[in-house]
Image (cartoon, rainbow, N blue to C red):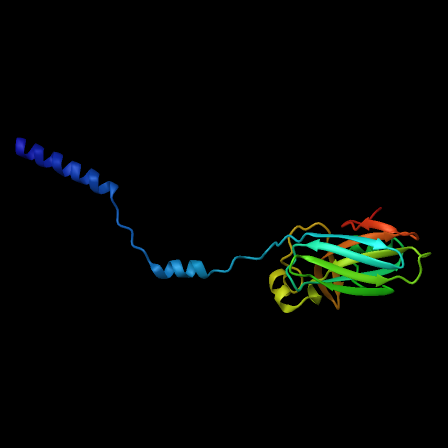
Length: 191
């Protein structure tokens, strides 16, 4: 009986030791597949800061986290609050009704520069600076989507329609007074 007790104790001890040990089979092909997966670009948050100096020319400078080669559009028109109503009810059409437009390309360091010559210093203007996904190079559209569907909850995000298609872009505003000066552009229209 003593021999059976010793055998049972050894068997229990062996089972306890084996319960703590396990064999893990590694599949190298699974690791390769996981490494090759692309990081999702959905919900990319865009930061777009810009300011304008105004005299006879409007000098728009900006800093952004948009990739190099992204295109920024700027436009001026006579100042009225109608564009703000259009943005709020999603009937805005970018660059429509502007008396003067210009573009700037994002450089390596994330900056851009756009210069517009205004007709008259005596006039008040509305300046908009916009990132419009439908007017971007294909490499930029790959990241943000051709309709801006991958743009996340970014300050100044707005919806617009162009040729029956709906898009999401980024916009900044400034009311340019009939003086000389400098100001920042804002993501939300003044009320």
